[in-house]
Amino acid sequence: AQSVAQPEDQVNVAEGNPLTVKCTYSVSGNPYLFWYVQYPNRGLQFLLKYITGDNLVKGSYGFEAEFNKSQTSFHLKKPSALVSDSALYFCAVRDSIKAAGNKLTFGGGTRVLVKP
Amino acid sequence: GAVVSQHPSRVICKSGTSVKIECRSLDFQATTMFWYRQFPKQSLMLMATSNEGSKATYEQGVEKDKFLINHASLTLSTLTVTSAHPEDSSFYICSASGYWDQPQHFGDGTRLSIL
Image 1 (cartoon, chains in turn blue, brown):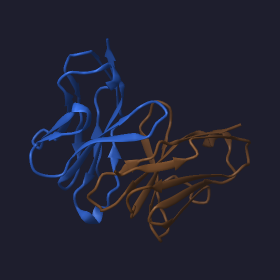
Image 2 (cartoon, helix red, strand yellow):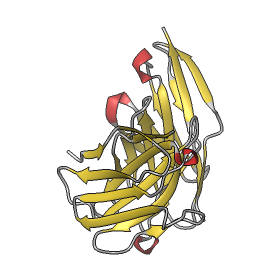
Image 3 (cartoon, chains in turn orange, red):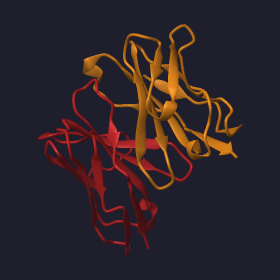
Image 4 (cartoon, chains in turn green, cyan):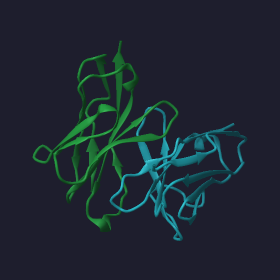
């Protein structure tokens, strides 16, 4: 079984400061990892993914994430947060084994509030 | 690219009504589509997975006769909530995926309110 943990329900950060949203995962095979962002009353927008290769993945809107296999983590980061980054962020994982299909398991979500 | 359109965005209807929600992949062929339900301030709960031309696979606890899913083409899946009741009120979101190693792309969701 696969699972995702986002240990923080909410992260508060001042505009211009670095933003980190934490995610740890559990999967039986090699993980495919994803970050999505959700704005109020909207669906999820894809930010970035880790499939293989470089552990540091760069995505949309200046976000990046670092895959750490030993710590089974995939934390989302942005060097300088904007007020417009305030939203709900979801980490998701699935097994890389094709037979497992592409069904995602989501974390509980972390609400980010960036204050001016 | 990878745009998923979901309609309607909001539905308000009386108890007992059946409601159909459409999910379309506009610029890619979606071999697999997913239907989720999201309660306020909670994560997404997967309801079912549908592959084009096949019967949907429902998650445990989801009534397949209540939530009818059709995936008749590579660009369209529909979810019909039959005889909806107030407890079915929720935010329903679809997603679509092309090749198995590609990310899911999400529609903007449908806010369903049953009076």
